[in-house]
Amino acid sequence: MRAALAAVALALVCAAPAAAAPSLVRIGEFDRPVHIAPPPDDPRVFVVEQDGLVKQVGGGTFLDVRHLTEATGERGLLSIAFAPDFAASGRFNVFLTDQADGALRIMEFPTGRTLLRIPHPTATNHNGGQLQYGSDGMLYASTGDGAVDARNAQSPASLLGKILRIDPLSGATQVWARGLRNPWRFTFDRATGELLIGDVGLSAWEEVDAVPNRPGFNFGWPCFEGNDTHLACDPIEHTRPAFQRGEGYCAITGGYVVRDPGLPTLAGRYLYGDYCLPALRSTTLVGDDDRAEPLAVANPTSFGEDSCGRLYVASHAGPVYRIQDGAPSACPVGPPPPPTNGEPPPRPEPGDTLAPQLSVHTRGLATAARRRRIVLRVRCDEACSVTAGGRLRGVGPLRTARGDLAAGARTAVRVRMSRATARRLRAALRRRPRVVAAISLRASDGSGNERALDRRARIRRR
Image (cartoon, rainbow, N blue to C red; front, side, top):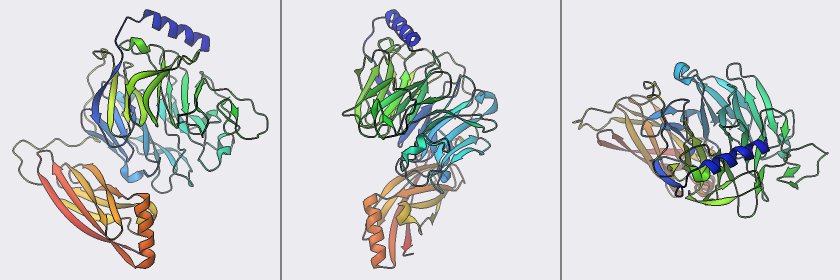
């Protein structure tokens, strides 16, 4: 398989015409984007926001599952995958961390059924989080080791620290690969079908692991980190990384083998990033010809590949970029299907001068100090965007939250606080029976009309 990949890569490089360096073209600004995905044979590109929204590049909310999603730390809505027959069935899947207890939850829409739920109770990190359909029509998912007990990655009794292969209709689940610490992003090479996993290391190594088209691979964690022994374990047969990097790296963001003919200088190379290093890099994997690329993205969280193989990258700070060399490659796919029920209603007609009517109710006050948030149930009488913030009197500020609301729909907007503010809140509640939260909201409709509203809520000692 490696020799075949090398031949493919060499042929593509030799055939590539001379070109300038690739560049980043900003295609949108989002709130903590963590994943980029297209439906098959569809020109649209969707971006997943960590708090629980899926938005279409160019405008519009496709899905809102904020009421189901716990989004503190590394938790949140982590990815979306569209079924091969999406155009006919409308079926897609999401991977999120459950608001009730942080469990890893893979759901099917539009039914809303839970396909797989894996307990993850004790840490907000090491969730994994990638979903992608393979060429076999099966749904593949990555799970972290749970952060507290790394032995989950080797245990046959646990689905943590694994790549899972799931029947999207029955939910039947098979362990495809094991021995992984936190496989945040994996991808399929569209030319060979090989699965490439970016596995986030502990302190010594960040690694990329390769899985040909068969199950049973063990990548060694926690007995091994990269090629080095990490823990004393009973002897195990394990597969070494295809690629690893050490000092200066902190959290690899797995990428794609470039198959876009519009990126000849990257043809056949594996493009990847690291959350702590802005410079994107590429490698041949075969022969480890690793190099920095002239592409800087702060805190890269995910790469994406559209139906024609064009590549995208998201920054956790907000921007999403397409990677291109000159004009973007042609993509002769058909027009998008009609809008789904998950998309917002039409904007008001020009000439609207009425501000939206806004109502709000507070929730989550009893657990605000522990969960570090206050939940606002907000409703507009027309489609609107809402901004909410404020402060805890005598304690500290609340972070600003934003939400897009459909007309008449009561929507959860979560106003969060920093860890330091939460600590001060707990200390204040030990000294006095209540703390007042002063919350300010502002709603704006599609014509620019605005409505402001102030609310006071009392967080009481339990």
